Length: 424
Image (cartoon, helix red, strand yellow):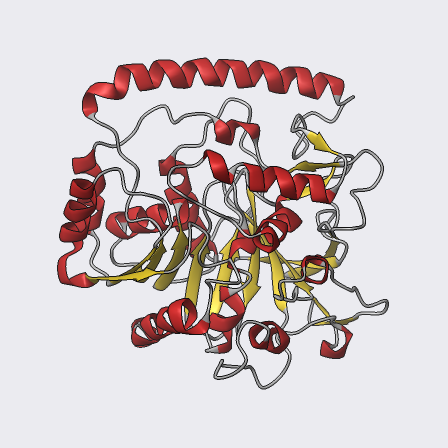
């Protein structure tokens, strides 16, 4: 069943397609969107042109390829001068909204043919689907269907209810629920940081679903010693109580906008200020990490919005954020400490329970391991199923233009996924 329906989250008309294998209250919104160019020029990356007179076909908005300001072909050739896989025709991405049984709506950018082997792309903490804007077109050009989601509380996805928290187990559930909503029986995973850990936890929980995983900069779920549980919980409760009060006061000042995405987040005067704020966080992270300004702009394009209407069109540097400035879209509660952590033995148990091959990319200036012993034991838990590539770059090596090159990052990832094509 399909019908036309206006979706306020996107400046396009969308259709609702009901999923037959889920309860009738679960549905998916589909809207074609023009792809963003992947050059290091920030303003051109975040800009998209919307055709004035789109045509409708079979319940889905259809926009002629010639109307797009950029194509997947342009995106891939901007990253490397030659030898990149390129589609035979312009390949736009799609914006999808998946409404799940518990009431949350998860947003996604989808690249590649609908018939292609499925790849679920999971981003890192406080990032969003745009983190794969350099990789996804390249992988899609090889024939894969790449679904890059915004985890709940991030990007364009909805936030959890005021009484809820964000635990790693919830992220595992949403990854599983999304695969079910997409009717995938088996699939591969491309994960960065938190997303890589969630992907491995899902593979350990449902080994029959996940056939291969690419992990960028993380191998497994973060752990803490068992005897730290009481102090960890005490600190988490303190932070939660503080954030609840901050959010309550913010919503009161928002004049009736209770529950709106991003309410209470700091307002910046311009897109450029928000980008600089994102860059400033890098120096507070462990190790000698860096993030290119163009990468921060890519993440901000989806991770922030006009302060008055945070779910308006994506931001464009140089054009401000409209009257009232801009603010991040993420849920403030994401900054709070987890209430409980796995022990290292529990974290490794998920690795050992998984059955799929794993490709791990570690940056030379990336996120440091908790200890050399932990890194060795986690790698040993996967045994011969694990391939480790140490490449130039920092924590966002898959997004920074200087490190996300064909030879070091793109080609090894596609080759690894190609080896598992027959399994999905």
